Image 1 (cartoon, rainbow over the protein chains, first blue to last red):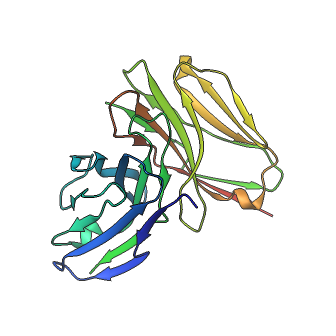
Image 2: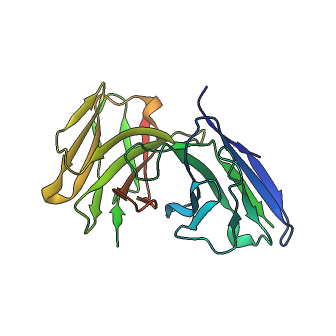
Length: 114
Length: 115
């Protein structure tokens, strides 16, 4: 089944403790991206990647890191999480980033930083 | 800068009613794509439709229909004979064609369909 898999689905952590949210897709998509969803704000893009070793900032990159060492994986790293990063996170992939194919989203990761 | 406005924060209807979700966008680009996504209570985001800026034909898919009007920069979504399973948050999104890579999402409209 073609899908984007995120782990974990739920995570509660403490301020300052480094964490990684994994994202993997099995569709051989070149484009992958991360979003955060906050009440009243819709989805905002954090980072995106056009291909292996090619990443760039989205609208809200502060406090996050990403890497793309393999085509299928695009982990989101929070080096020192803070409470304002409590949010619902989505990973997405697409054949290309140019919008014409739409995006396939993962099931989401609900992160709480206390 | 791009902007997508979904002015309706929440809509509540009774089953079998028709309902229209509004989406108004702003962009200086001449070529772009518009999307609708559905987020049911389970939380995942489900792709519904993509429309490019050159194609103003309306589209119908079962009980769903979309009305794209470039003259008013709107891409509205109508559900006919709504059902409880249509209850979800619906997002409209815009991306510049050919190299932006950063879509702009609206804030979403929460649709509640009562039995």
